[in-house]
Image (cartoon, rainbow, N blue to C red; front, side, top):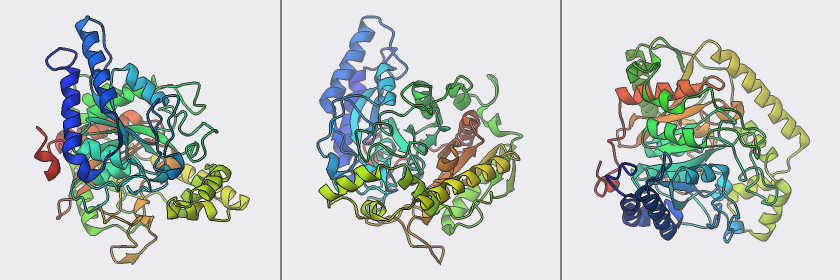
Length: 476
């Protein structure tokens, strides 16, 4: 519409900023709103169109940036008192790419400290709150980005996912989020600049990706941000994926979207063989899985034999963290988050790290062998629906005592393997809280994940559902 002139980029930007003004005092999605810069960017798009110039595929589209992703000239707190006044001198690669595509950057969104948490608490900003019930968590670490999209503050947002941090808040906020295969979307400087302790970490686990209201919007973002870059030694070519086509027309140009899963062999694992899962979450996800059967997929219940990976995962995180630099930050800033301080002060050994590495290799081998028999794996995204503020996670699920990170057991294995994985809105609990369904593809099978997501969306659309507090200010 902006390119065609039926609406201006300035008007779209003002609508987004009005939504922020109306809702963010309650939800705390943004930690740094760059309204004046956004208006200037929108004016530049409108001027280019008036001159008859070609504009990019995101021309005039407001976009929110997670505060772990560098935006040149804008304060990036990274959720930490140690970076309270940090202003990057360069953009992250993905920010460079969306700028070039014409996006209007609204500002930086709320994160827990350095992203080392799956909820929205931060020592440098108000706690992010779930738009469906502000007394509950929105999930994290891409907390503010998910809130912004779920409430219409921004149609697009960046998340990052080192252990589920795109998929977690997507599930808890009732939107779509995708972690593409490892290397599809290049990362720099966020995980690769040794000058910044805390920011430089999680190199082999972290992914940047989209949080959106629709699958097509996520595919559009991926079409802009995916592709190799010399600043990321893990980045890979993406010419094998037509992102937009995969999300829009199923298998061929003349196929119905819902044909995208017909004939596929799909594994459904309600608990990965060992996880405690809330009964309402399980019921919602099972109904969603039934839709894939209705669409012609061959679904059978099966689980890869992975075991409990919680400690191994966090050991991998520690092994990829700048422990020396972060411990020095902790000495200077004792007000850092308690759970982060506990991780930094743990007496890690070389054997801890090598044991975790061996576990990761085992997980990768078991997953590729398992996926050889299936096109896709379906699971709940999370073991629970949104829960209360002030905790890292529930310690009891379905009557079982569990560690406070057990609710994340479905998502972090896919960071260890690097497989593509998305969270799609599956439905709601009896209390009206959103539940996510995770779709996992084989190694590099990003197109399959997008096709399956689009097929489910066409059969059970979700974008018309708005949180009550947003519905009053949003025109669907």
